[in-house]
Length: 281
Length: 244
Image (cartoon, rainbow over all chains, first blue to last red; front, side, top):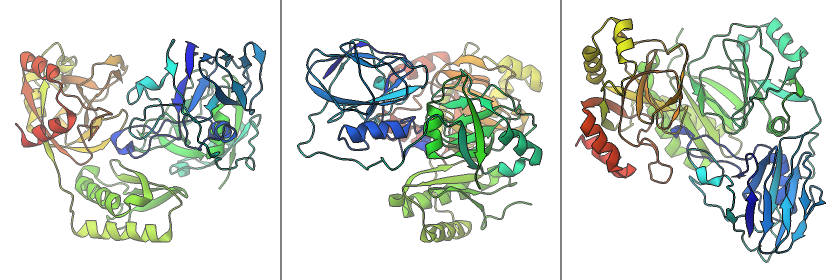
């Protein structure tokens, strides 16, 4: 059990996402950097579908009320226990009274807190993922008490993800053609692949946006379903890389798509950093 | 050249996601066919799918695991069957809307733009039967086909930063209703007092893809009364279908 001394900037519960309701306009939501979150669950001996706490830029300060084993996985946060620095990807045993300060990051966007046994979280429409309309209570508030489950007596080990190391320093994002890829000509494709794209501060859990405009005049399409990983191109040349909170339908050309691994990498890119696209067929 | 109904374009996003598209068709004409296919796919492949999302002229199918050749064969078969016979049972809802000045923020603007008196706009709007092509943009937001071509008006050049829940809007050939506060660029014609989305009450959304919708006018005091009633969503849907 924990008490929230300070909630952090955008600290929410997330799991693998909300499935089965997209036809009602309900976005999938869920963990932005699947790779790091799954690692935290794995090391905490949790099931892979266990809800984790997703922290963004500046994380919460939590007071441990009853003993808990925790793991943090993510990029570049200066986390501490009782003001002593701790590292990611290691199981720590917290005692009653310990203060866990997730800290802040300048080199990444998210860090994930998994507690052994899992957090007690109310699922809405089958998922413990925060959404401001569908599941508004799944965002941390000051003074909130967070309950955790007793760990199972048998160790529940999830899928071993050790074989799928991701290099978050990679600037190159693998992309694949999308349904409307053919609306691009050779010049468009050169423009897309030969230039760096700078992550814009207006990026969010809904979409990564880039500073640069694409010189084009692409028509809109009739609205069609979209999902996290789709890259849209607007008639005014804006590139939109849809992420986990993306709307379920959209009227912009879906020129490319990002792989699941690419989504994890993109999720950790800070505004101002640059990416390149690498087109795979 | 329109895609024939029997042979949609099959686009494979990846090993789990397929989109069926019928391009260059008059999408209003294929609505009941699309919903029949969607409904049949949902039933026949239910254990293999996480989601199935219809849109104007496409259906996107999200599989739990990699789809197989058998799954594709079943899809093709369902499409053939739906060309011959559409077995989708349509629910028709009668929806109250208040068109009073204080809510119908763009009605005067629309009247000037379309050169039609405001009362005639309201009458024309309420005289049609619409169909819910799909839900998207926000949880529970219905995109409605069937708007009178006399009322087609482009969306506003600058969106409003916040629209009231229940706001009924028009943009292009579409009509829709905002279920929650949101920015919005559609022209506001009136407001509906009903809850459009509740994540803890089945069926969760008042409008379901494929529904038919008719609007009727209510006054300010009826609007306020309905807002305060907070009817349970599943009961609400039953009441509206019966037109009580």
